[in-house]
Structure formats: structure tokens, C-alpha cells
Length: 390
Image 1 (cartoon, rainbow, N blue to C red):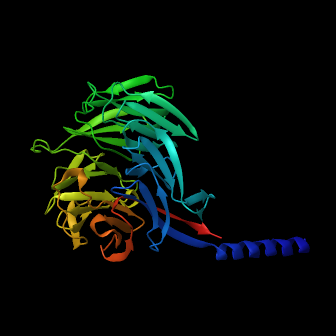
Image 2: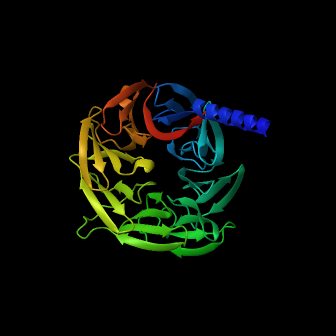
Image 3: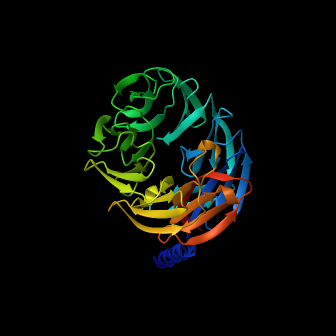
């Protein structure tokens, strides 16, 4: 018994020593694309180091991938979707998670087809919608499946898990080339289960909790992914003609959606109360973002170079700061303008005219660092991760 007590004491001491040696690490990494060239850079926002740079098929848009720490890159000109693994994996161990950092890597040609547009991850799957032929490629664990919408259009496919199993929400349009007017729900085999035709001019989607929100011409259509039930929240009475949500982001810690609302306003939707808050801006909007993990604040950049912190719970601007020079909104997509992304208490702002990426403190908008990036950095998507390192 004496030897057993000594052994137990030794094991306990070693366990305590191991726990004391473990360090909690926080990191924020971002993928940044170029306006004109097919490339993507991976940047450590906490140190300012450029960790890697990859050549891709063409410029493209960034979305979250199917796995944590991964980003998808939809390249319309090249007709392909790549995935960038930012190299920040968290492995759960019950009471804590271990963070493993590695060199970022490119996973090329995850999906191919004409004019990829919306690429959405969910339920461990990545769904790429191709506007050119209305096809949808679903990638999961190295396998791919191709389905088709009813006609080619600028659409979306959203994978999710319901109480009845895996599902896929796919947009549909009245005719080829027209804007979608609703969505249908498919099972794993691609069989249509139900459809909803109550979303004219559908554009923009996000998830908050178990609810997917879709921007429509007359309101936001909500889908409860658990029950697969739809409901619609109409825009506030008196909303100007043509003003609608075209881009959405959803909160994780708060059940809410934030979106654009015409050229000089943003809106916050409480899906439980079915209420909108509209925040008028002092100038026309260039870009907006929100950290899903800290959804009490959204960030809006206006054409005068001012960044605005918007309290999403109160529905008002609570702070502003000049962060870049003035950018004109005229000139369409041929002109490179700043884009935003927020994660881990930081806000990343691309400044293509000056070939740099700015990193701001999310709470104060104070500049943290400036990172030189060759070319015209455009789209940016930041992801934060925390965990122990032994």
C-alpha cells in the first residue's frame, strides 16, 4: 500500500507538471486574394507574417470551407474551386482542445464547372454552385457528387443536417438566366422533398444557430434546419422600393443576422422576435463584416474611408475612425476596393490602392499593424483559433 501511495503521488505530480507546462495559444490567420492575378496569400494577423502564397487559376471570392480552418476560393474565370487549409487545427480532448499549427497548404480543383459562384460549407460538406450550367458539386471526405438545379442561374446550394438526416437546399429559377425565386430541399440522393417559392430576387445567405436566412426582394426567408420548416420576415413597413438584403452574415454567440440594406444602410434581423433594425450610414457603404463568434458588433466601411462599429443589439453606430483613403464607388467591379473580415478581436482591411493589409483592434478600431502584400489585395477572410500547446 505504501508503494501504491508513492506511485499515485508521483503520477499526480507529473500530471500537474504537464498541465502547468501547457500554454493556451490564440492565433488569427487570413486568406487574401489579388484583384487581377490568380493568387492567394495566407497571413498571420497576430504577427504580420506572410506564411505562404499560392498561384491559383484566376481571381476569386472567399468563403468558409467544410472543415474548421479551411477557406474555399471560387474562381469564375478559371471554372474551378480550390480550398486553402490555413494550418490551424484544434483537436478536442473533452475538457480542452489542443491547437496544432502547420504550414498552410492548397487543395486545388476540389470542384470544377462553368462560372462557380456561391460555395458553401455545412455538415462536413462543401457545395459549389456553377451558374453556367446550374450544376452543384458536393465534396465530402474526398468524394464528389454532381447534381443539377432546374435551370442555369445565379444560385446557391446549402448543405445542412436535419433531424431526418443530411439535406441540401438548392435555389431554383423560373427560366434560365433569371434570378432565383425560391429553394427546394433535397435528400442525400438528390430527391426533392419540398420547395418554397416565396423568395423573389433571392440573393445572400447565412446561418445563425439552426436557422438559415436568405435575402429576398420582400423580406428574409428563414429555414429551421432541424425541422425543415420555413417562415418569412417581411421588411419594415415603408421600406423604399429596391432596398433589400443582398448579403448576409449570421451570429454564433447571438441569434441574429446582419446584412446590407440599400447603398447607405445596414440592417440587423432578430429571427426570434422577427424584427429588423435599420442603421442609416453617413456615407455610401463599400463593405461590411461581422465576427460570427462576437456578433454583438458589425463593422462597416464607407466610401469616405471611415470604419464604423455598429452595435447590433442596440442598432446604432457606436464608434468611427478613418482607416483608408477615399474609394470611389463608380467603375463597377473593374475597380478594386477594400474588403473586410473580423475574427479573434481583430478586423482585417484590404487596401488595394496601397498594396497593404491593415489589422485593427476590433474594440477600438485602433491600428495594430500594416502588412505589405504585393499587387492589389482584395478579398480577405480571417479565422481565429484557440487551444493548448504542450
